Length: 195
Image (cartoon, rainbow, N blue to C red; front, side):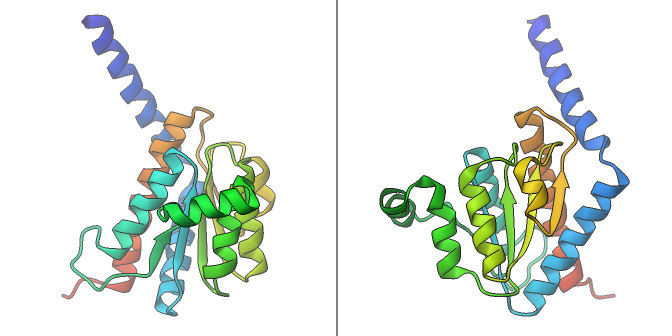
């Protein structure tokens, strides 16, 4: 039992260490992400989230925080995740291949000025890369959340947020933390507290 407790403490400590090691550059990028997202929403544009596996779950989670609410009772905000419509996901995968599953949706849904949020721990997922390319073609501003290398996404985005870790588990934990911070900042920018 003590060995398990020690392992739990070690995992918690490492999760905290990764988040506490965020550089000033990363903190500025998080603030820039929130400001750019708030600007897009203020201009009646939308935020579009996408990723695979745990990143798909994060995409859905963050879109829900914006559509429904994080903390404040306020109007809904235009956000969606490209991982929720099983008919579209399976049709696009079947007809065009899984590498095109996000790009096809972006071609259909994204307009100039929208903000795309690509989540990928490795930064190398082919379908995420294709989605980013489609978004750039459509005139979207592209934000990517990755691990420390940034992968192939490093050269394809307008704003890159690299979590200082190579461990996918720690990276995903940091991504959802960053996402919650951004949602909180967006609410504060768009709906400042009344004094």
